[in-house]
Image 1: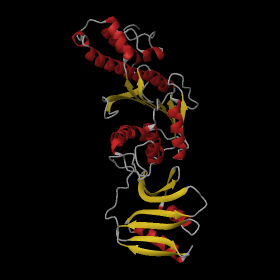
Image 2: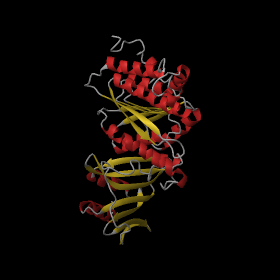
Image 3: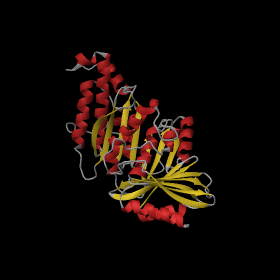
Image 4: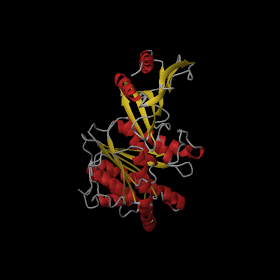
Length: 402
């Protein structure tokens, strides 16, 4: 290590101690890792501890690692050199410092600060964006951002949707039981926007080691997402070709997600979550055809038939009844449930998220729940509900029948 690189490291250390460090950028790499291009360093707060986040930018992937300050000093020292990074720029509130290799030696120079204030470092703080756009290779390859991490104008709604989704789930995900590896299955992953964001948030924001499997029946989307996951260095993110109904998990499912699974595919997803005793089940149902057909077929006479004679009202009532019974069935199996609004896309109607959170120390009133389901079916002229049938609840006695 030369006197100049030692001087630069001392300036880096002093900026950390003085709390005026903003960020550090490394470039002009001449080392042995042929695809490594840059390293970007910034402060973060993770679980109330100050760390330095290193974004290693490779030609086809990005890797993020967090270090304590002393570890970060050692890592920077190993990266800078005539056989490593030969350019470094340290941004601070008082002065910027540049280390450059020129004419066979390193030189250090100072200049006026380019940034006047510190950015928020808190991962634990409430933020408008749970998933930052900068430095996310997967967002670029999914067509959300340009190469510099700027969100395209025509992708603003999709980017907001991703963050809205993670914002809704954030408190629930933080409460997941600690385990060496959390297994998440996203049923019907589609183009993978939310699957990638969920993996990124759990592993890189919450620092909760997580394996995520995206299940999708369209082979071309599986191939594209698999390539992007590999490019991003997301080693525990996998995509599998198949349907929700026929999916056979190789590991216990801790979290099950199913967004926009059509009609009874949502029931099949909830069935997978319940039978695997998942800690968290989150579905965004759509196309509630099964219950609507039941209501149209039997045309029950009741206090609401003046509404259900109109097609649009019948459709909305079928949606509420379908998801209401789904919530009751989740409660039957020991899940605390809630239903929240979820904006699926700027150009489609708003959906709801049905959320089931496993409660280990409660005993649900199962006969009472079955009676509520029986009364609801009778009132609306429903012969069966698909999830009820999948879970084998049709033949069980309710409170009045028992």
